[in-house]
Image (cartoon, rainbow, N blue to C red):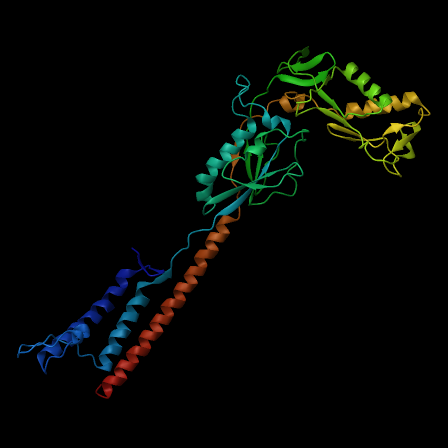
Amino acid sequence: MSATLLSLELARPLHGAVPLVLAAVLLLASLRSARAGGPARPLGTARFLPETSGDGARGPRLDLPPSRLLAIGALLLSAVALAGPTPREPAPDARVLRVLVDRSPSMYLPIDPAAPAGERRIEAAARAVVEAARGPWSAALGGPLELEWEPLDRGRPASRAPALPSELRVPPRPAVPEPRFVGVDAADVVWLTDKARARPARAGLAAGGGPAVPGPVAWSPRGALVWDGRDTVREADAARAPLLAVADGLDDGLAALVEAWRVDRGVELAARNDVEVELSVQGPDPSGSAAFEVVVRGTGWSARALAPRAGVDAAWAVRPGRVELGILALAGDPDDPSAFAVDLLGALDRAVLPPPGVVPLSERRSAGEAALAAPTEGAGDRTSAGAAGRARTARRIEAMAALLAALLALGAAAARSVGR
């Protein structure tokens, strides 16, 4: 049985009942002794009331000599000590779980291949984490939980939200590889993926699982290569062609090579209003008033060229989905035109992204059964440490109350011995 007194809980309230009863008996005895003899005097706020005429008896008063007052104080403090005052357990602070999100292409495949517009693997795993954090994980980890979603692809900040943020529901472009959860096996972490390739020792795990999902696995000039979900890959019109955007003002010789590559690879030119393209070829700003003659080099070739600044030695730079030219134009034929053409066409091949819906065969294979496991360490230590601290505080309060009760009892005995 427990009761609450201010910010303390009384763990043994019945144990303090006897001293409280004795204190009440002393108060009643003081009241009766005041009634028994002597003229009645007003008690408390009665002195603020108007005086009444007549010989009627006035109300009773308390007669509390110092010895009796000290004895009552000793009994009250004894009641507190015996009742077991304990600090109330504070409401636990919310614990933050870092949910490390796998954003590889397989995470955006549907759980049910027959329902391509249905729930995807990333959404199933995130839903399992949210439901567990609101229920069994919160109880097991000793308090409310907040989720911080942290994508494992670089350049994306973490986001604290009760559910999977909308920006993580969109597949990244370019696609990111399967992550390796290295160095992040901690009790405040959850691995969110589709296939439980490894089991963490301390971190939580949420794997969405899912069967193999047939569909486009690559792009060729003749169309998409489509996997049937078993052992056959065939050509089919199952995805649109990649889109190419070319900057205006590109050097004629370079533009001709890019166009020849586009036709050979079956890539389509993007319309002006196309926002998402698989390859963008960009040149330097041609509006500058100065052009510097430089020598650029590649694999097996070199050539003179005009550049917007001195010191340029590379004709282009390759990034996923983008080829950035560092020169305005060639100032003469390369010393090996064939090597130059092969080098540029290879750069375009490396940069172009697959069109939407094309997912590598390794990503389309079965992810197995769904799995869910809570973090295994951390909360219990915090809970037990808090309980131990409250127990120490309770013992100090009991000892202090008992010591003060003993001092007041000694004072009462001393006052009684001198007749007060």
